[in-house]
Image 1: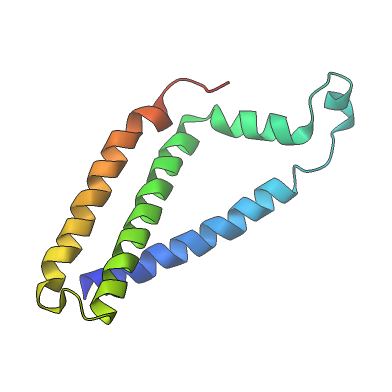
Image 2: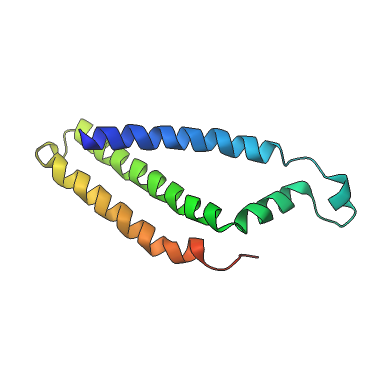
Length: 117
């Protein structure tokens, strides 16, 4: 039951992120006249501004966790649908949680590190 709930939740979070991502990027496609004279376009300044916020970096770590779990649980569900691992669904669910945690923890220094060029 928990695997189903987490999978549905992460799916909806990814759909929400997709629409938010499209909305933010579509508003920054044009060129700001003030920054065009300085040689910088609106897209670059928007991305730089977002990357400089620590909360955005934490949200990116959360997005990574959601995406990795959704992928791993989806693979687990595919295997179950194919008849592989029917007797050990609970163990494979916990394994996907553990692997998600390991990937996210290993990625935290990259996401929360210094500003990228």
